[in-house]
Image (cartoon, rainbow, N blue to C red):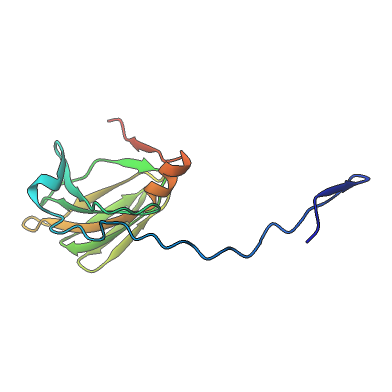
Length: 152
């Protein structure tokens, strides 16, 4: 490895990658969140979809379980973190900017960073249900997580 030097305008730097030490294993006390969808874990958003936050000590990712009643539309919004939604029940579509992405039970949808999006349940009888994973905690720790609801 070389040290950083400036020799007549030419900058020579040491290698920026060094072999990492083995991480220290820390097992948190909480490894399971039982009955995620129990009533006291619910976070209603008024007329918006109900969702449940999976309360586990992830430092770089998070998970929620959400639902959307028949013939309902979620609030349009965007955020600085990427999201993947897995559809457990129902059918509908997600608008991502001006692109319609139709989905049904068993599908997964990717929502890119900072894109305006919302979900629509097209069923007249079945509540749509999904699991959503994102990297918001990682961005929160860096101080760059943003969320913006659309102003109607």
